[in-house]
Amino acid sequence: MKSLTSLLIGAALAAFTVSAQAESTITISGVHNCCKGCAKGIDGAVTKAGATSEIDGTTVKITAKTEDDAKKAADALVAAGYFGEGATAPEVTDAKVKSATVGGVHLCCGKCVKAVEKAVSAVAGAKSHTAEKGADSFTVEGDFSTAELAAALNKEGLSGSIK
Image (cartoon, rainbow, N blue to C red; front, side, top):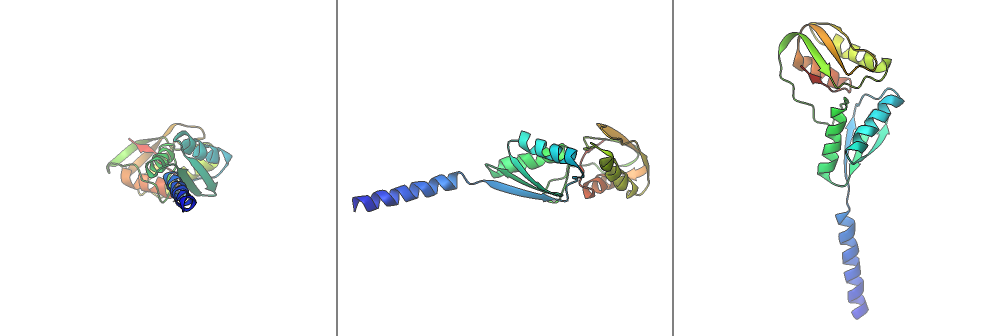
């Protein structure tokens, strides 16, 4: 009987240990990922936030020790200039502007710039942009809505701050 009790206590402790070590996962889809530079940026943002990433095309699976840690890693991904379904978009004040500076968008290569071009061209009234490979920020000119610009960038899997 004593060995059965010990066995039950051991099983209960093992179950508790497994549940205490449960991980949390967030899957974000539609993330801009056109090259190795993008994949490196995605992984770097998530890893720096203390989580791990599993990247499959435009889908990023973030795994962390807790749900809060996974959310922090997802926020870090967005802060690094990426976006996708399952992430929280940065708040943007909707304003009708003639010029806006966009910072923090991931622009490691020409394909990243083409994604920005596609986003800008989808915004009513936006006429031009200055995005280029490796830039930290770019300007959009025209007569357009900042909320529409943010939504267009998000649709392309990108994120940034608009001022």
